[in-house]
Image (cartoon, rainbow, N blue to C red):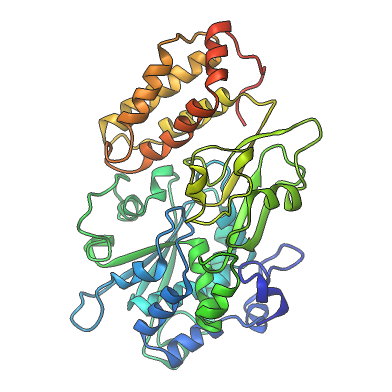
Length: 433
């Protein structure tokens, strides 16, 4: 372990010039030692137990325990083969870019994590489902994959063992819905990206009807360090009982927007005041979306909440992806919410009626309010939609997720809504984030 990766396993080996480390540089920093330990010293089930003991939870937003997810995969000679392992890198939510940072900064870390996970799951084929616009990430991944094949870290009989793995990169056509793992698999099969009904679970009937497990980029990049250094070391990186570090990002009118790898459980106040340098001159913090566009707004009184999966619900929101977007006091919250709802309505796959019809309706109402054409009854219609498009009312989680910022906007910014409707104008003069 190098000094850089001791406290920052995800980004500690990044090169100062922004280029991706070569295979030689990656190995010099301890790269592929986790894969060597897994293949030479551990059985597949032991790798899964180590990941489960580490407390690693999915960094794609849901926060489901990674080791537990792996444990659902049927194992042994009686299990159906081939099996697949997929990485969802279709990062399309507004403000999200943490996975791009990892893929461009250290592609070998993702490749090693996928090889270890595939070994643990007895998968012989792995696929990275990449956002179409990530051209630099694709080039760096393809170069690193070629190096990994040449170095026998991918391909046949890896490191002289019986384990073999083929790894592919697939550039997606670019739809937000493909961030949902079942939809992503439908797209990989070459079909229109609609979500699937569950059960059967994807670990039983996933890609092309075969057992498949999917993880997010950041989740997978943690795996090599866990296997190499052990679950106890990984848990020690965190400030809470949830293991490891987290790649938090912050955008909006702050002094230094960006991404930082920090201990899991870092507060939003520390993120804002110490790492992002506070608000820009002339602007004050009003609220923030803490975990991506599909999470509820939090207020100034929530800034000291620990940003982990268990603590964030205390603020009424979720950690999600840890993608914080700050709303300042000079930006219209109605225009901001309209912008989000317009995005979600355009990205609905159209499979179920509440989502297909409800989201555009909401976007049109918010647009009317923002333009000074709202009516008092609009507030009741918006609240009714929050109920009708809530959890359990639609086929997948896109619409319920979209309702989270709207629901909290109606709660926290009701005075702004009513002033827009009463005065027939937006008093901020500028909409959106």
